[in-house]
Amino acid sequence: MKFCIFPETDIGFYRRLLVMALPLAAQNLITMGVNLVDNMMLGALGETAMSAATLANHYISLFQFAMMGIAMGSSVLTARFWGANDLRALRRTVTIALRFALALAAALTIVTALFSRQIMSLYTHETDMPCGLFPCSWCEDRSFQYDPRA
Image (cartoon, rainbow, N blue to C red; front, side, top):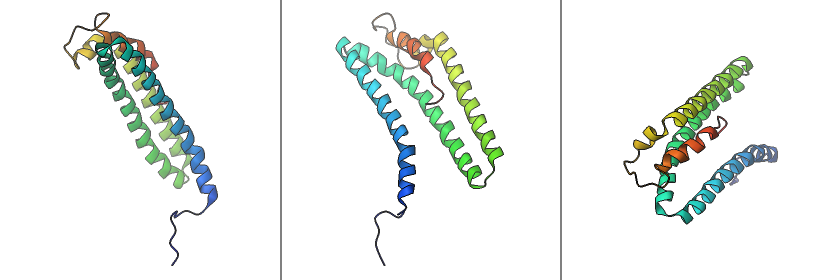
C-alpha cells in the first residue's frame, strides 16, 4: 500500500482551491494590515488613545463575528443545495443570507452613529479620554464602514 501525504492527487483540485483561497487570504491580510497601521498611528498618541481604539474595535469585531456566522451558516446550506443540484433553493439561501447581512449592517450603522456613547459605556466607565470620550468618536467614524461582504 502506497502512503500519500496528499489524499487528493488531482492537480486541478488544488488550482481551484488556490483560486478560492487566495482572495480570502488577501482580504484577511489587508484587514490585519489596516489594524496594524491603526495601532502604529495610535501608539504615537499614547496609551489612552490606544486603549480607547481597542475598546471601539471590540464592538466592531462583534459585527464581524455576526457576518461570519451568517456566511458560515449559509455556506452549509448552499453546499447542500449545490450537491443536490437544487439551484432554486441555492439562490433563495444566498438571497436570504445577503438580506440578513445588509439588514445587520444597516442596523449597526444607524445604532452606532446614534448611540456610540451608550455602547462604549458598556465597555468602560473611564472618561479621561482625549476629545471627550474617544471610543465614541472612533466608533462614529467607523460606523459607516460596516460592510456586509465582510
